[in-house]
Image 1 (cartoon, rainbow, N blue to C red):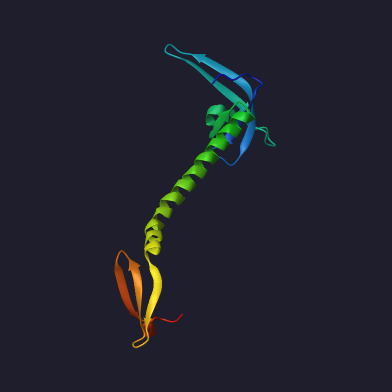
Image 2: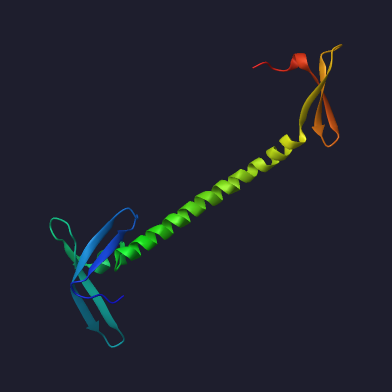
Length: 137
């Protein structure tokens, strides 16, 4: 990333909960035998106008607020999609219950002689229950 002296950049905190502007106040180029290294010194907008190397800042660096916005929207979209996916996975636990409730038929045939009822459980299964033994809530 090539930055210019005087340029304002935006720092998205590592927790993603704050955005801080910072100004590039110094650009340092060092050339070694094997490489050329560029580092930057920034000024923060706190009451002391803290000056520190950009490499010491624990944040994501952006050159515009629009690029910060895109990153935050992407993060939010991914988070929402993960929440929806997790909910969908949990919802699948209810599929068997829905199927069972569709198969059950609670139409009763009462036998007045012994207080029993026949309940159609579906798939050709019939249950005989004693009405007097049902818990009353």
